Every structure is written in structure tokens, then in C-alpha cells.
Image (cartoon, rainbow, N blue to C red; front, side, top):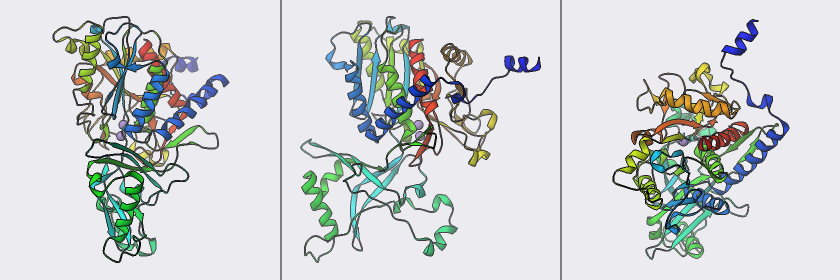
Length: 465
Ligand code: MN
Ligand code: MN
């Protein structure tokens, strides 16, 4: 009797793997295989845009600029400066009644090269870096690194750089002190163990031909770069070169139940939402997918979510569907719904003390929602309204999707944020909804394949609701 009452009244938090069919398990594994492939091709935002564009076109999406007018069922994309992207499937309802947005980000913590990166010291050539986003600096030494990005010459010619990923490419590394001589370093606080100014990438050690003058190793590197890319040192001034881990994303565990890979924050939500919008056919409410840039450093700049580029995109949809009239954009946002698709901190038993078990997200228990984020008394949080949370719960439960609603860590331990507040400020109903991650922001992050698939199903169900 009492068991039945428990069954009826308790919010069951179950491991997703427990009651899935063989067919669903196969779907989870094959979806994750494609996700791993996406991660390996898309380590930086520009590459993610490139991969996403290719996938979009293969699935019948076309550049918004090629449309004179838009009608129900049209599938469009818009690329902003090669670094962020919006996609839409036009619904049968008017846009003025609201749109349904899933928004993720495709930038990840990394090391950017400084504007004047190249120098030589004691027979070694190095690139200086300035880290991007919240990293634990000690994690970036003594791991294989690759260099990705662009160099733009004054002529406007753009050179794509991707070195360290191919098996035949060299890789790069940041050295660390041997333990034998690290007595002082080991006494330091962890956050001071490696200095930001010491995150220098080792590039080479051969001096140019018979040069005995200073900087012969640097000269040799520049000569190699000149032969390979036809650039001079000054061309590095107008480059965006990003140093990321060179290792590949892989299946993790004897049971292959997890994915280990760089940049899963937030390419995991980017890929799952992208896959979901590509699978849509007819929708009632217009579906919009955002792949944004610069989230890790505050969403500023014209490729970040704070920019008006997204407003411009929605205005263009209004213009091309023939609906537009003065101030209509404000109305669209006030009647819209959004899932802010970003990763959540997964409960890690090794670091259990930072989490409240009752309110933590667990790997393998489905998509993770945060009603609010923020820190120390919800400061800076976008707190989803209970009415909207109930609407989202209904969508999930109707579609048998496992979900968990959690907080990011214990009260007063820390906190975080996503792009949720930016859209909420425009009037959109927003809730954070993504995949729980272990070792977030580390060079190798861990997720559960079960949750990846649930995220995909969630975004699809949201757009079809
Ligand atoms: Mn994120
Ligand atoms: Mn992040």
C-alpha cells in the first residue's frame, strides 16, 4: 500500500539507461557517434559554423539572402561574420504570435594568440597567448595542442589555419616544471600554480640556416609560415588563432556510455539543437535555432548574443513573410518562448561537497533544466516563471522525455550564467535546458550519451509543441 503511495507521490529520479529498449539504445549510440564526429570537425566557432552550414544545406536549408519572400515550411539560415549562425523553419502561425527559440553557443574556453605572439628565448620559439574564458590554467600544460583560426591579410585574403589535428601534423605544447625542482611552485595556491603570462606555446628549436644573429629560431619559424601560408610577422596582427587541445573526442568507459571531448560546453547543445531543427518538417510556431559566439566572455561584441544582429535576423523574417509593421519586433519577443541550451554542472561524487544532492543534475538521468542560475542569492539570474516551467514540463512528460530540474552547485558556493537573461530582457519566456557535464571548461569534458539523446529529443519536442 505504502509503496503505491510513494509511486504516486514521489518525483522519481531514475537512471535513464534502466528502462530503454534495444532500439532506443542503438539510436543513442548512433546519434552520439555523429556528435563525436561533429566535435572533431568543429573545435572552434568558425569551424562549427562551417560544419553546421554544410549540414543545414544537406537538409534543405538555404541562405536567407537568397529568399525574396518567405512562406510556411521555408528553411533558412543566416551566418554572422563566420562566427555565429541562426536557422529558422517558418511555421504556419504568424510570427507576431511568437517564435520558439533554442539558443546555444559554439565558442569554448581556449588560449588565443596575442596580437604580437611570436618570440624567441634561449634557442626556443614560442607563441604568447591570452586565455579566453574561465580556465584552470594548470590543466593546459603538458597536453598536445593544435592551432585553429584565420589570418587575414591587408588585401582581404583570408587564410584558414588548422594544424595539429591530422595524424601527420606536428602538435604543440606548453611545458611545466619538473617535480624535482617544483618545491616553490607546489607551495602555491592551485590558481597561481601556472601564471597567465607563462602559457606560451613551444613552436620550434632550429635556427635559420647559418644565421648567428639574434632570433634565428624565430626567423626559421617565420620562414616556415611564409612558405606555408605566404604571410609575414605583421600579418599575425590581423589574425584570430586559437589554441585548443589536439586530442580527439572519444567514447568513454568499458560500457561506452559517455563521451569525453574538448568543447562540449556548449557544442553538445549546439549539435543536439541543430540536429533537431534539421529534422523538422511542418511546425505551427516558427522554429529558430541560435548558435552564438562569445558566451564564454560575456556575450559582448557583434557576434555575441548581446548584439542586435539577432533582432536584425528576426526583422528580416518579418520583412520577408510580409508581416512587418512599426514596433512589431517587440511584440514578437514578448510572445516568444526559449530554451537556453547550455550545459549544466553534473554531480561528481569525487567533488560531492560542492553540490546539494537533492538539487543536483546527474549524468544519465536526462536533460537538465535550471529554473534559475546566478550566484549568492540568485544575483544576476534569469528566473523562469512557474507558468512557463509547467508548460515545458508538460511538453517533456507528454513526449516521455526524462528530465531533471536542478541548481548549479550549493547555495553560496558559486554560480554561473548563460545567454538566457539576454532574451528574457527582450520579453521572451526562457528556461535553461541542457546537458549535465563533468570537468566543465577542462580540456577534456565528460557527458552521458543518454543525456545527449534526451537533449535532442527535448529540442525537437519543444519546436513541435
Ligand atoms: Mn556554456
Ligand atoms: Mn562555459
